[in-house]
Image 1 (cartoon, rainbow, N blue to C red):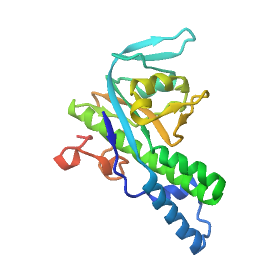
Image 2 (spheres, one colour):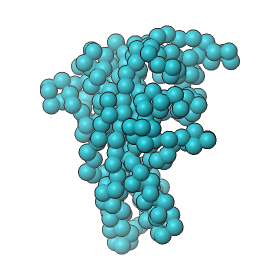
Image 3 (cartoon, one colour):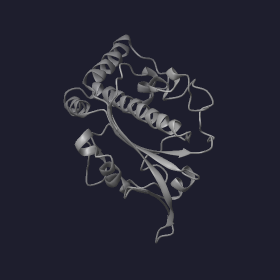
Length: 235
């Protein structure tokens, strides 16, 4: 499933958090500049994403003793103790990739030379934008799980815990992310555009400790397709 995500605003406090803001005094000029850069990021950004779901085929033990989760219908495997904990009891797994687009990437490169201050603000805005896109993709996976009467946990990205970045090539290939989203990998397995996110989400028959008990505060709230129908993911 390939989607364009309509994101017309960003949480200013999140942008400031990525900038390392801790309540320091800001001049009116800098305050206005932050708003202007955020608006520009929204103008040039083209957030898109791809999601798929796979049934759990079972667990195996690798030669080095690490656990490996195998998924039906794909060569993608999820390795490590982090996945052993995160996916314990999962019957299916949702896989997502999102990007803010090459427009954001090009502007980051231009500002790095032309205006380093604006580049720092734009970088934080781009991170906030792609995380919102990841929220939207996660909301799609939550809805797909709910259609099956399943519950989800939170998204978990390669490079976190001991889930290796080495799974990135197969993950992106599984989602056809290069052709459909324009996401490529460097030799060190970092993604281009840099404002891109990949992640996996577990799907379970039983409610998980991380399942939101209410819709309030849920990061997927703005993109939820369940609430308008009178259904929630928490039952």
